[in-house]
Amino acid sequence: MQHLCTVLYLAVFVASVALHAQEGEDVLALPDWEQQEVHLSPLGGGLLPQRPAEGSGAGFGNIPGNIPVAPPVAEVVDRLEEVGRGFFDAHGAPTAFTPLLDPGAVLPEKDQERIRRMLLNHGLTARVSLRLILLSGQQRLPEHADLDHLGIASQEHEHDGAAGLSCLIVYPLGEPWRVRMFMSRAITQAAPAQDLAGLAQGCIKEALKTNQPTEQLEEFIHQLNIKLTWLERSYALPSSNELTPETAELVANTPTHVDRAADTVMEQVWRMIQPWLWKAGAAALALCVLWLAVRSVRSRLRRRTRVSVWILPDPHIQPRLGGKYCGGGGVSVRY
Amino acid sequence: MQVMNCPHCNHHLAAACQRCDACGFEMAWLLDVLGDGVVKMEKLSDRAHCLRLADSQRLLQQIEQFQAHFPQVFIAVYFAVLPQTLSPNELTFWLLNHAAFDSEDAERQNEFAMILLVDPVAKAVALNVGYALERLLPDSFLQSVLRGMRTPLWHAEYIEGVEDALQKLAARLRGSARRVEPTQEISPPESAGEFMRQAGFDPLKRTHVMEELQRDLNEQTNRW
Image (cartoon, rainbow over all chains, first blue to last red):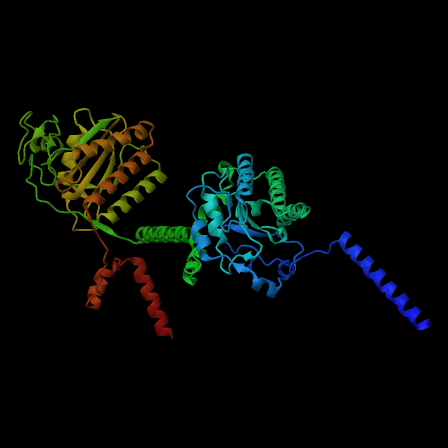
């Protein structure tokens, strides 16, 4: 009898616990994350493969925007899908200025239009032209992505308020911590790298305050617009007709198309010695002139010190007025 | 063809004419006045006494340098006061035909001579050249040389004026001359007798002093 009571008591307890457990599930729903999403959240970036940070591009400096910076998770990166070569061929040299590039159509058309209006509004008010490339969360740029080509295509466009001031954003939708920001050389030379990194950090931080990917993107662009405007004012970024000679020369010398495959050693050497060629030529010319001058002076001195005589011709002239050696003539003046 | 003028009337002379067509001037006129003899002409003669010794030496050095560069050419600078009846052109014409210029070079001919005559009283300066220099130094050029001398001569700066004239004449002659390196060939005398003749050891005349010296020398020799 005692054993029976014990069994019944346990059964009632288990039933009550099960009932309470069922009620808790109804109140607090567990997150339904998919396993794939968990793998696609690398805090160490993964948008781009490792590439030199400074000076590798012809005209753009890479501003690391993903904070905190940690080494990319190789497995996660391998699972990301690379953007195809056709993407760059299609958007390398656009015939019209398109501030927003969404090759994978990751944004709905309505949101695309809103983002495009934001970017165009930024272009009307700011000197730094802004171009945004949207990728999906599963996409990443290929190993040899020619971002310089994309950025320069934007830089060359007449929409740019100031030649040489461009900003290229590669933004994976929904993952703002993987965003990459590329500034033109004119900006990276004017502003310190720490300030530009802080600018990117601030934009990402503000974007991460919301969960909705579209809202994250809008907030990111909004913050970027504000911070770029302050950047212009803080460092007095030059306009197209206010470029310093060094910056203008840099912009002028920036190649419009960088063909890395054809970038042989000879071309690199040629590019390195090209600015010195005219100086070397001028120096050689000056040396030649100096050598000729010294030679001429030495010749004159030698001729002057050398004793030499001049032999006159001896013509035969018929005598006049009975003079054997002189036939009149002669001049006289009074003073 | 260089056109020359008559020294007397300054009329143009035809080639190989023996007397001036305008005034009838000929050498015989000057021979009656100045004679037919040959006179010695120094490089620098200051008969007007207008040069200091230092100026004379300086000018003489300039003339010798000029003649060293042009071994065929004589140049004589003559400062004199002329009579009113004798024009500078007439005197230079006569001098070029009757002067023996002071030169050690026997190859020089009077055809290559030039005379610069300055009359500080009449304030006139004249320049005349021989036949060989007529084409190289035409009258127009000589006129410009003399015009350049007028200002320094008016200020009695005779050396500066003559030096300027010599520089212009030398520059003009260099343009028409052929430049050569001077060669100096001196061969040794063939015998001792020829050497003694060329050495310049002139024998002294036998005098009373020399006889006494010779006698003393002989006595000393005998005593030894």
